[in-house]
Amino acid sequence: MELFNRSLHGSYILHMEFSPLIEFMDDNETNITNGEQNLGCVQILIPQELFLTLGLISLVENILVILAIMKNRNLHSPMYYFICCLALSDMLVSVSNVVETVFMLLNDHGLMDMYPGMLRHLDNVIDVMICSSVVSSLSFLCTIAADRYITIFYALRYHSIMTTPRAITIIVIVWCASIASSILFIVYHTDNAVIVCLVTFFCITLVFNAVLYVHMFVLAHVHSRRIMAFHKNRRQSTSMKGAITLTILLGVFILCWGPFFLHLILILTCPTSVFCNCYFRNFNLFLILIICNSLIDPLIYAYRSQELRKTLQELVLCSWCFGP
Image 1 (cartoon, rainbow, N blue to C red):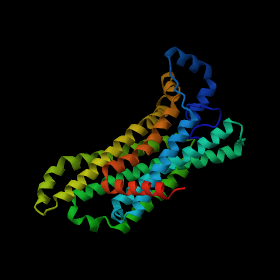
Image 2: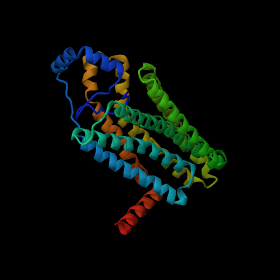
Image 3: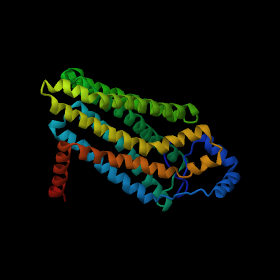
């Protein structure tokens, strides 16, 4: 049942438990192991404490981003609503990682006995959370890209096109679709169609964002000349800054999630290959990269937005001044 998360069986399990792969490994464990040894496969061990530490840091960062957007009325706009939802998506990864790691540490140290039924329910909940995070993150990256596109090329009509009620409607639709699709994915996790759907969705969103970004950056210079006559050059500069920020976010997402989706592609294309199994052995390393994405995103928000950075500083200083 563990389509995304780590296994609670033992201290370090460095492959994803997906049925086709596991069935093969059970039948051919000796041959694969010998083949991997001949290839000199490297298996990187990741301490559970590292998962817990990064997960907690990421959780705190994303909570601060959400609180900052809620606190500052200047950030109450569709773009920041979408960024807030992106932070919430990152939080799902952090929460699921922290919960799973705590249970694994308790189990490894003999402080809690994990019954099969309890383990299965925990796995299902964590899988739904992470799958929802994947789908919602990709969806909100597309939504933010579309918002930036409208801001740049339809600047004079932006507030009539992207109204707050429309933004809220989009947010509700994305979350409902993400949760519903995640539940379906977990229910039908033994079907390869689940992996095909995830990989296809990943590729479609990347193409969509790439097309929008290329169009934005190629035509932005020409468009800026047109609107400069209306004294909107400052808005254009702000919009392009937002587009650059989202480009950085998308680049970080690809770097951090890319190895995971490559893992899924290899499960479909070469689950019995010794070379692919060398790659499968470092699945926990790919999970660390996913957690790093949740950790890096808030830093990008803060670095690229002066208003958000200022509010975050106020929140941190207030917590220090009035904390216990």
